[in-house]
Image 1 (cartoon, helix red, strand yellow):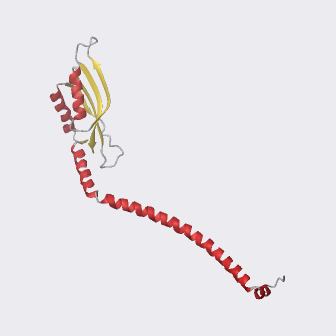
Image 2 (cartoon, one colour):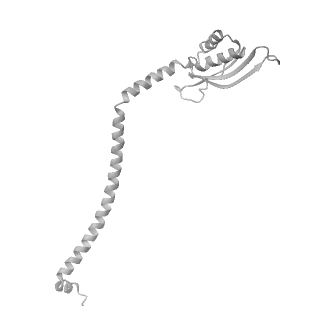
Image 3 (cartoon, rainbow, N blue to C red):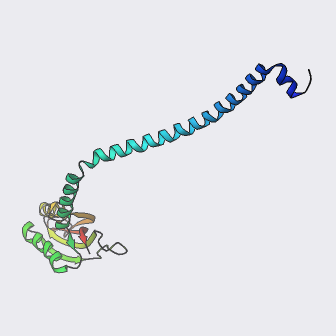
Length: 183
């Protein structure tokens, strides 16, 4: 066989055209397969985004009710919060607890507000150090009133001790606690 390309084309035109067509078809299949994979990945991405948007739309139907519910809860939390700057009102709460529960208030101090370094509107604990005296059940009743009272309370530490070694006298309770508060 001669190496002349025109001679081969003239003698076997059908084979040459078929070979060229096969070559072009192979390149076309390769290119199309690459595009198919790219299109499939893009389709998967769009389908995931569409599913996310459909979920968001279905959840959005309940947003007004959820917003109203959360707004009500926020108002209730703010109503139960103490204000760090209202020292007299905060201390009056503990004096009222003393009267209602029957304990004797020994020491009451508002400590740091817990707002150091926080955002201006952030809620934080307003600290108190309280010492009360009474019998065991009265002290437990006072502690329960603090925990279930009108303000959200968190007991940080508590220590109970007796006045006399024979446990015949009243007990004392020293509590460090925080009430949920606003600046």
